[in-house]
Image (cartoon, rainbow over all chains, first blue to last red; front, side, top):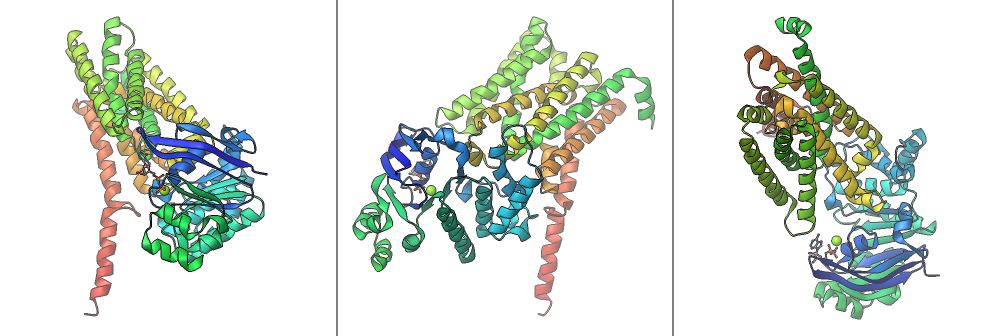
Length: 246
Length: 288
Ligand SMILES: Nc1ncnc2c1ncn2[C@@H]1O[C@H](COP(=O)(O)OP(=O)(O)O)[C@@H](O)[C@H]1O
Ligand SMILES: [Mg+2]
């Protein structure tokens, strides 16, 4: 069954369309990569799917419902550049933010919420840093903390924007292992990604986008030189990495 | 300590003291959110935009509070509309709206021919606080503190990561406007104490000082409230003893605290950091 349906999604900034007529559908319980060159509209598409920016047209249905009605089942990890790293917040309190959606208005996080946040922090191997201010961490550690926060949300659908950019190898391994675990538990994970070398080992399905959908479906079907060339406009070094693996 | 003696004896001084302490506390609390959300300029804008409201209230013979809150909120909405519906960036639309409102206010006040009131509104005169002003300030104080207490979670998450908050369904636009309304209330309540021009020092500087000293938002808010109240008391003291306008004294008191934190804060202090770097240099150069 196709539980995630995106239909004819278009988005403009100040009258200039940056993604047009994006449609695709996937089963839930998959690890799905959103790939395409810089400026292709990957982040824009993710934000539009989540209702964070206005759309020109299109709809996003998850489990046959418009996305807005199941917002509490969604965890989103924005691109790291949007965060103020000097903010006075320590690591364990950052993860605790993940318990807020289910608490709703007026209810304070209780002891068991704090314990749960610590558990999530342990899953990403960051419990030693619980009391550090978030700006004191390396890029990879910060990304792990934000993944822990997403885990704390107990979501069904995870959306991560460029989680592997500028992070160390160890952190990347921790993160991809956890994402695969989530997928194995039946959760659906969307990941914006632009490094082509690991696409085949990371993802089940792909959305290949460059302003429009170039292709979408299982990795074996999408990750082919011809389609990749079309998306990346014949950029040569990109092709070597694809050619080497396909 | 003649000042304390006088405090016991004069009722106007007691009112001034209570009012300034409340103002210091709420400025510190709301100021913390203004600093963390990068809205310092917005604070400046709202404080200037209350001026036409004050003038209109004066002309109509009603309490300045109502007019000031109205024009303050209108300008916050105006700024939001301009920056969301055009390419004009937020800081530019703030500049447009607040200079216009301030100019309009000056003209209205000139027309109403109340030059003495103008200097009081611009620079504050904490010693002229009436009972009604004090009660208004206390009510605003209760409203502000209750709102922050009730919505602490929402204020925290939307200040830190607005995108994540919006993604889980939090009405971040509404929170933004709620904070603007609280900011306007606080600004208006501070008019008597610090005046339009220098409210910003009371909002920003104690919060920025606290920001240098802690890694937790809750602690920052308490510290900012403390620094705000302390500087308000200092302002009252100098205003009473040396017959100085309270606003500028308060502004300088907040600045003095900031400088101390800026130089000596254990984590961010410029002085300690320089010393530490020099020490490290010594280690490197020693063997040579
Ligand atoms: N807030 C914005 N305002 C105007 N243009 C934007 C904005 N965000 C992105 N764009 C433009 O939209 C296009 C797609 O951007 P984005 O979705 O960030 O691409 P990607 O994530 O694939 O690198 C780019 O040309 C970018 O310059
Ligand atoms: Mg992007």
